[in-house]
Length: 142
Image (cartoon, rainbow, N blue to C red):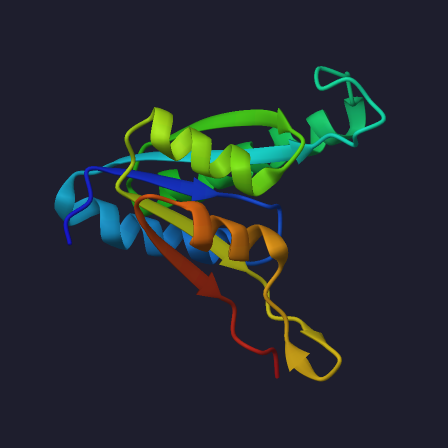
């Protein structure tokens, strides 16, 4: 598979730098365009365009950090900060709008009730995306 457009969803987890490096490894040979997005989920009791200063600042910081990692790996990363009711739907909709052929999501290693936990956002992206989806699960820390 040689993707032309890759969407990487960034959640601000410790897995983000690893997933950027993985995307660079995939994108470079194909000279693929890479877009990194961060979605701020807006609670239903707030208007969708609510100004959430703290979340916006955090989102801008994590996208800047992702750009630095991308620069170190030699790829250009276009970034976008979104507000939506549901992160998975925003990720899939953005991938469709931008005609992406690959979505990459990161999952930090975590357990719930003794089992490895895959969050609802990753599950919903897998189920609803019309293109290929690659999930990078971080390894268990020692």
